[in-house]
Amino acid sequence: MSVDMTVWQELAKKNIHNRPAGQGRLAGKITIVTGAAQGFGKGIAEELYAEGATIIIADMNQPLAETVAKEMGERAYAIAVNVSDEESVANLVAQTVEKFGGLDIMVANAGVVRSGPIASFEKKDFEFVTAINYTGLFLCAKYASIIMQAQHEADPEAMFDIIAISSKSGLEGSNKNFAYAGSKFGAIGLVQSWALELTAYNVKVNAVCPGNYLDGPLWSDPERGLFVQYLQAGKVPGAKTVEDVRRFYEAKVPMNRGCLPIDVARAVMYCVEQKYETGQAIPVTGGQVMLN
Image (cartoon, rainbow, N blue to C red; front, side):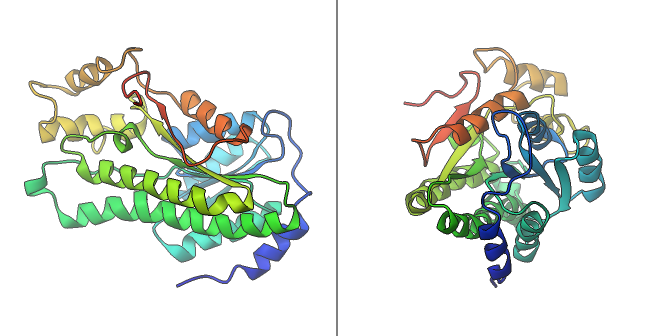
């Protein structure tokens, strides 16, 4: 299934030089951040907004997304999306163009984790992670690129960005966390391939690979957080409590702390501001993972 985006392509062409007002490094940039109602996504969206971007808070949790958008300000707008559903993603991009006139940056941040040993891991959990983290990235990039290529036709000098929020687990394997790591490794393969294709349209495609946001809900949720999952899966030898798991992961980082949204947002802003790099996977890991 492909959704006809012709109307939105034409609207984006007409509005290529009509951008919302804003002040800062990203002034006027119309930006979608998926999974932006909480966690890394919320923090990234807040930092980009502070630098003048117009932000779409795209999330499955629409009430929470609307609350976040309202708190952020008039250049923020909430749209519900299920990134694993093609029609939902197409609708997200169409609504963005209808509301603000175009699309300059797609930050594909939405992601999920299911961990456990391979022998007992359920196929449905593997497919769930793949649908959100891998297929979801494809759909976000597909529909963003449709609009961005049309905008390039209207202004061949304009530049656009697709940024995948991968993970340090996309740079090295992760014990008993293979579904997540595999999806994040795969994301980098997609990024590199799209970078080769889309450079002809001035669309840069890069990945940002954060370390562990230990203070975020992905880790700290008391029921489904990674501290609880990893404790139950026996991923940290000798760990008796979630505090033991946390200390174990902090000790892995030379800078001795978890990654924060501002760290990731700075890497995202680098991707947008620079004009001579595409197809890269940028680590933001406090030195935990160093590229060869």
